[in-house]
Amino acid sequence: MISRSGPFRIAAMGVIATLLAACTGPTKTGLEVRKAAHDRFNRVGSAVAMDQANQALHAGQFKDALTHIDRAVTAFPDDAKARLLRGRIVLEMGRLELAMTEFKNSSTLDPSCDECHYYEGVIYQRWGRDDEALRAYEAALTLVPNNTHYLLAQAETLVALGRIGEANQLIEDSECHFEFNSALAHLRAEIAMAEDDMPRALRNLELAVTLASDPTVYQEDLAHAAFRAGEWDRCLNALDAIPERVRDRDDLSRARARCLAMTGRQLEARDALLEQEKRAIARGESTSTEHDVALGYIASMIGDWPRVDLCARRLIGRSPLLADGFVMKGMVAESQGDLTTAIQFFRKATELDPARRMSRNLLARAEALDLASGGTLAGIAVR
Image 1 (cartoon, rainbow, N blue to C red):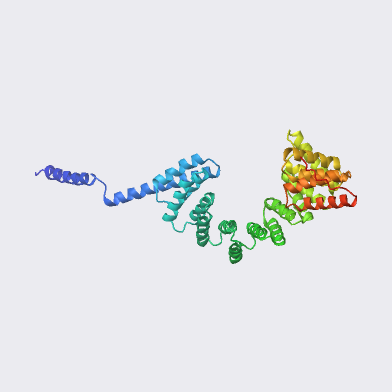
Image 2 (tube, rainbow, N blue to C red):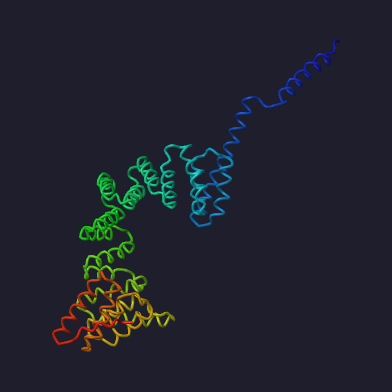
């Protein structure tokens, strides 16, 4: 009987050797599969890191955001979106040079990146380089012509550069995209005010208030524009629409008092300013120059001369180079029939502010009254 164990053993050993030889290293296909799997793993990790960075950015946790985005950039240094997000993070941290580098990196990696150009414009404006900012905003708007932020940024930069006509043209050319946009209506109002066209400014501000989801943001501008235009009732309506916590602010309270005075409600205006003064004193604060100017003139409209005199004394003591205190002292003296003293104060006010028509008119009137009553037009300077 012939034994087969020898040949079988040799054959089995050959098969095993072949299998072992095959296991000494991965094949080319195996390497590619491994690399693809590794890339997928890294991309998932990068996406998670970018999401975490974005959340931290919006939460104002900039250091954490930078830590997360750095993981993504390290894994994929040529990822334009990661570079863009890193730029936004370091921009919020005030690191403008690094942010600019990241935005330029991102736009190089992805020439269609509109946000990169927009943020470059933001940085150029912070550096005071408006011409370069304008070119960056133009590039962003060219890539996405219906983006409101890009249009507003470009138009506002043109306004800042004094190129009002170009800003107007830009808006007209883009009107089909933004016809019912509150921010654009507000920008049209700003342009109108720059051109001193207050009726058009008011119309656009009222449109912005109508279109805005939160009109409060534009009500204050509407009030200021109406005040500047001498539209006292419109100013009061705009101020009344502002939430009380904002409306009680000192500058808005003064504006409201002036509007009341100009609509024949001088007593109400004076009392409103006195209430404001009481609140300031309760907070341990002194009255401001602006407050005393407003209160003094409004008090003069109702003949409250003791109040006018008090405001005048406070103004002269605090701001001796301001004409208003001397104007008020002259008004008080004239109300008492002391034309000689009134003329002295009005002359001092005119010396301090020669272009002020009110001071010159009051002086001319007091001098005419003094002459008519046989006075001597005393020329003694007020010290």
